[in-house]
Amino acid sequence: QKEVEQNSGPLSVPEGAIASLNCTYSDRGSQSFFWYRQYSGKSPELIMSIYSNGDKEDGRFTAQLNKASQYVSLLIRDSQPSDSATYLCAVNVPGTYKYIFGTGTRLKVLA
Amino acid sequence: KAGVTQTPRYLIKTRGQQVTLSCSPISGHRSVSWYQQTPGQGLQFLFEYFSETQRNKGNFPGRFSGRQFSNSRSEMNVSTLELGDSALYLCASSLSGTGNTEAFFGQGTRLTVV
Image (tube, rainbow over the protein chains, first blue to last red):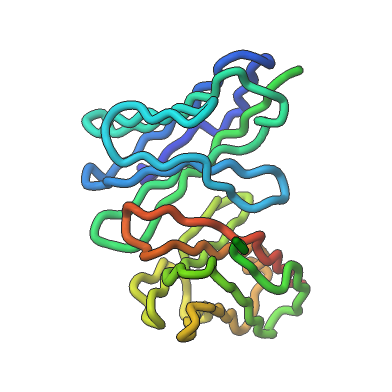
């Protein structure tokens, strides 16, 4: 079982719709969760961090964390073609200074 | 505020050679982590440094090594290059590297081994 799992996609949504990206993790002790966006040929860019159960909103982005179910999700409202990218979920490894990344979900927003 | 700077951006090396990559973190950040990114494996953790000390190492062979200087700049070295070492090498800096601090990536160094 992979430590951090994401559906590779592509996830296609029409412009203006809500895109929902999901990530599950295996270590119940993980406390810190991050979403990164990576455009093709570029490096990952931090979108959001979340540490507590519940929702965290930042502009059009909402991160949701459910530690009991071991999943974290990212919602993108009013999706734009410029949101088309690969979204990476990262989870800390408890007791270390190490982060495990999922393989990413490729999002395509159709104009 | 300057971001994370990695040099060089691109490298082409021959099998058997060695290579050194450099990373300058965001000012004030003391933790630097290195990752290898390939299409098949995604982002794989190489190692993390804080105050010149390696605190964690990933599952890579000893050919991969690194160090950090007193100004927090970091270098990683790959010796006896293999074709499979072709990848995008990314460094990320954070204030402390602890679980609740955010990490920011540099633009990466794309290494091609021929």
